Amino acid sequence: MSDVIEGAPAPDFELETADGPVRLSDFAGKTLVLYFYPKDDTSGCTREAQDFTALAPEFAKAGATVVGVSKDSVKSHEKFAAKHGLAVTLGSDPEGAVIERYGSWVEKSLYGRKYMGIDRSTFLIRDGRIVRIWRKVKVPNHAQQVLEAVRAR
Image (cartoon, rainbow, N blue to C red; front, side, top):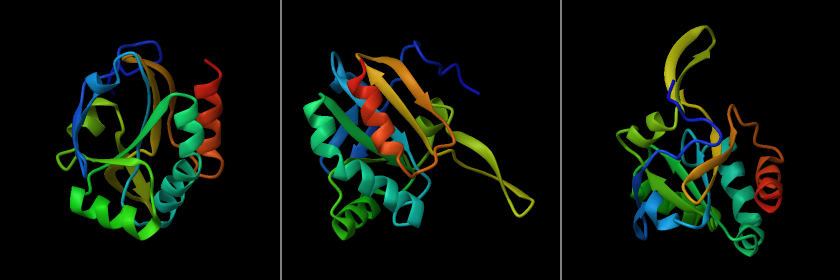
């Protein structure tokens, strides 16, 4: 596990998006909600992206940018966003380096079979520091909880 803890500096990253690269340094002095999800266009991931999209104007009003990250390609992200009318930036991490840096590449288990996968997790980052971490996220009401945490500080 990485040393990603609340209060620590956020691990640096650069991700490709449909609008070009996005980096941690782009958010100096700002608030970033960075969330990791397993796969484009699957039920839970779609619901989560739609929930963040529905609250996008509220996040913007609170001064926060929302970026979702998975191993899917930028092309996959573009199709996913277009199909569901998503208004959050989606970052591509095909090698999983950023996912690992944030401690979100974990052993999972399905029907007794163990495998490595992305832990649905969210990081609230303010001016380069991790303010709040949610691990093993349950999708219902999650985006609202994150918004409340953004507004609370």
